[in-house]
Image (tube, rainbow, N blue to C red; front, side, top):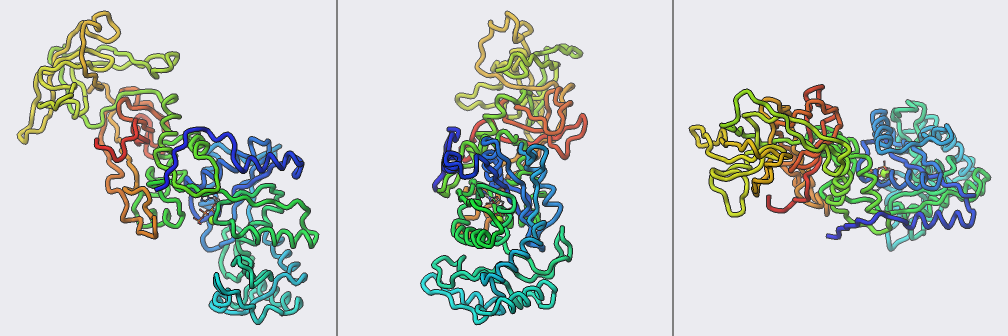
Length: 569
Ligand code: ATP
Ligand code: MG
């Protein structure tokens, strides 16, 4: 597998080099205008984030603007729900499409009149014709990699006849598939996209914005370049699979420039490699399948690689931007390892996230010599590297919660935590010595007992008299914040779940979600939705933005402290 680990920030890339050259030659008079053109037929995913960070990032750093354009020419699959979530996701990622108080938010469907008008113009100029072959005939006559295509018997229709037929297509006089409009280019071209591509088809479908006004809809290749030119886009950045479409992009714009519609220079299409992330899927169709078949709990399930999913999981916009910077932009398709994405999150949150103690698999610890009614405050830094953020306070009392695996009756070699006769420090509290444990009738441990040394408190002089190897975290049973914590893991067991056309559902990780009832340090009572913490010794967690209630947070594990995937626990 070709995975890439690249930790250096991308200073420059081939796209910036092109823009720098254009600025040197004055091609666009120093103007940089890009666009991000999602089709509103699904939720954005992490692959789109790469395109968003690139398009908006480039525009921002050159003092230009990036348009948000909905490429909405497939009436059947598009909806307002998707439009709204896309707008929300791009904003959340930290980008805007406003410049000098002008909003650059566009819809390809707003160009239907113009697109239609230009199609008539191409017909009049002998550059497009109505083809009445069946879809199968058109396919069969396309030719192959070794054979040129066969011109349609309708290819030489007169402009008048074409215009009449095209107008009647628009008027709804024909059935779907009876006619299409094709660009008249070159049936012998080695590039299939140039063998008279279809640019309009009949569809009796309701469009979420234009309703039933149209029954002919323009194709993507025709719409995209014209939308770019209408919006004065300078650099049209897209993924590599469109490289073969570039001659068509240029042909259409050139023909319309010849007809006096567009001025030169014309927008330039530039391709870059798409993001493939291991242990994730970046196909809208497959993501939709995960949702509709109930393999996840919705588009914003914290295991989904959608923007709404990674947001709910707890990823920050800054970590996603950092990730996109680190992976850079190239023309070589490759797989990026999930650990690079998680690493960017850790690097962002290590500095930002306040620390708290959390016991995820609790068992009682009873300090037998601690006075029954006593509670004593303990203190710890909010953030170990930011003393200016001050101290947090939490009480210690006779009964505490500790992690079940911080106690064992029969310690393996190198185990320094609790076992009968051993001493450990309760982090930010006292040194204790373990005495014994209570068990139920099945032999399960229900409570661990210990005694404490009253002169050993952290931060006091006596603390130094005790040398212990183990240091465990804990929360006071009386003051703890009980909370549901969702321990998320990777959604797929395998790095390339859909490689080679394989059924990606077979690679689903059955342990990708585990729910535990945890006890958190008392301060967690006040956690607001989307507030992030480092749970000491465990990892980074966020208060779930949907299910948290005031005073009753629900937490999601964003990522563990270290990359331990695939390594023995
Ligand atoms: P579909 O999965 O339905 O084919 P798509 O992923 O291409 O669609 P669009 O809404 O057409 O989705 O994409 C909007 C923009 O995002 C396009 O410019 C596309 O090239 C870019 N994009 C999509 N997927 C990725 C990816 N994995 N990496 C980088 N850019 C991407
Ligand atoms: Mg697409």
